[in-house]
Image (cartoon, rainbow, N blue to C red; front, side, top):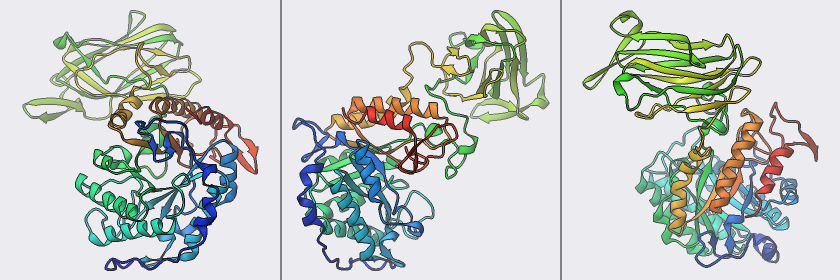
Length: 513
């Protein structure tokens, strides 16, 4: 690329737009909505957008033309939206990010034509833009700091705005930049605002999607002043479910096997020194002989004594005493306090000799002790590992254990509370009049299929209440309904592909609301 150049090359207008105007009404994905409905953007009700990302121009080294069958099948299955995450290097000349390759642009034109033909709204997205991509390799320049990539970013969107200015907003939208991060609030607003204003100077009615900052997490009210602008969140929370064992996510191979609904396990046991917080960890259920229960110990305050009981009978104890066992513990200073950690990895483990209805684990002496993991294994079943919440001051609760060793949330707890918490800033943004789309979501193929389905349904329920449209990360591939290569799915042969019928049925239940 040549960062010094700031003016785009001239683009020849093609005949795409006139061909598409005639079919605009066929793809107006709208439902009746009031003028005060933030999800009504121009003539489009974006709460009804449902679809998939198509990845033909996601990487320059293996890009291909878009496949009409994808559009045909997406329509056939009842969906109405595709997002095209693109790498700018797919349609620009090597080492010159302002010299556009017309043959590649015509392939994008063709995708828009496919969308019009099959009643599919098309959203163009820069997954990699001049100066920024959330994925490696890093760009040589910085979109948030450097003038040249900022000018190029605006030039690219101006080019697209001119090229497609006669295509109705019901058929085409622009998603400026995928998952912005590593910036400041000021730079994030500045870069996106420049692009919005440049596009709307050419085409004021074009719907523009701005991904929330910090990887789609944060909505910004600064964009409420613009018409025809939507902000996009993500549906990957918690990442320990959506990206379990995803090869491109550092540390994902060490994540505990995910479960849903989640069960929040408090990672502290307070002793008699803190009587108001003292409570045992209680596990209730039909606990079979041979059931293994293990706490991975992390830290304590000078002294603690763990005691485990099965149906009221003591079955195990562990004393942790920094003074009596100096070689076993490492001191850790924090301000005026000194805590202690195991000198080597230490666990408190129990194996039931007989069946039990209730196991309690309590700190019966001293101040407090923390543990980072609770693991459970019922004979003949997989081990379930729960990473604990180490937030200070929370009291332990009782948990129900299922027959296969999974924990259920405590009675009265909302199993989707973590999703509610994640979505709250976005619902607040909607209350201010902001339009919201879930621009990406889904679950990698290493997460157990039943867990994936339960988690996806929980998210879909939240978005139904909020009236948010959504876009699954891919149609074909590890997150998709086709060719996901899961090891625990009985696939259906469908048009030469492997269809996850259960996942499809779930998505179809939420095609309209």
